[in-house]
Image (cartoon, rainbow, N blue to C red; front, side):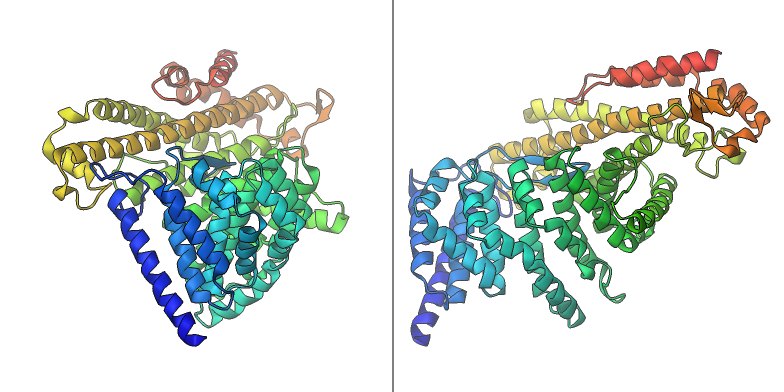
Length: 575
């Protein structure tokens, strides 16, 4: 038995290496980009390989875990060679997550032709397999579910109780993580990451999200004590690997369920309350790196979503509701402080890490302003988040001066990025006219050994790089549109509030009581605001906003709403 197991392990290991090598003769390593000039695979070869691998997995005994792991890895390589050309960018609230690429219909048909036998094999390994086998089984389930438009696999997982088991076992993962991280065993971390990535894939459809909610997924995430019991000595990267999967899963679930799902919103509010210490530490942390920005992005996205779809963090239990209110107040203060500490992207950069950080920072600031839009409320008397000071001497706190400064920087940044976007599109359309040196520099980001490429290959890779850079700029300009609209709206609401409702304060406005602090407010401060408004919100500045809103250089939606707000601001200044 041991001899046979060893033989199968060695043979399956050779199969992995052969299929990996085959993949890298047709695709650039670590990408799905087809190599220019590579010989195409014979028709039907991938489907034949897929069929043979599935049959080998079914016939390989459950006690031969190493062989099964090798076969799963080989099947993953095979499926990645068969992905369609269309990739899916899934926007989770404000968090942008790269979706799995869709397996082509022929390969999916091969997998489905084995019916329950193959599904059972995968599910059993995902449930009780050894570490690496379990991780690979979840990865396969994720990529297959992404292509299962009829959701037959999801139905099987639900009806057979596997999905419920996967969710309930998160409590076991929690204990394994606590033990593992304290002894430098990172295997539980990768299992946790693979499982939650699989559940996030399910959460990307409304049916899947409802199924997860009914199975108690948010409650299990709330019970993840590892999120707020992480040892102080643990690396920040380990915290990142814990935070990202949980928050991405929750945000994806809420987005799929929609804004009117009261039960989901209430449970998500409780999740925020339970993990408020972790969330506060992420928002307040001054040690910035790419992983921290990614965590900050998913956290601010979740908080902005919850604030937009309910007036406050609420719960049916009064004591819990009070705790939630207190948590919400603290988090709001930390969030608004981010507008001071985070700078908007400056000049464009070409390094991958800087490009990602640049987009993340812009997304975070946009998330925070979206939170502020909701936090002001929709009544005549707003919940003023920013004081009326405009002068530079009083611009230290959360004031209108801060908002106008952010708006100026956003307009400058959007103008610069718009010009860069146009240049990238022009270069991509005329990539043949670029110098050999510039083509080589661009191509190196796609294929590191581009020096060995032919001229045609180098030109193609340079074009791909330019398209990727242009796509990144386009995303940033879309974010700039949302950010500028948010800022203009917040400025208008505050200016209207101070110059109309606080200029001659009475006890009520439109039947709504004014806060007591405003009844004794400094009238001179409001008068000074009225005098200084034309100096800060100048006509050229307002015209820049209108011009940006009418810009059609990108695929971003133009904002007639912001233009309408500018007209209202002009009327307030003219009074």
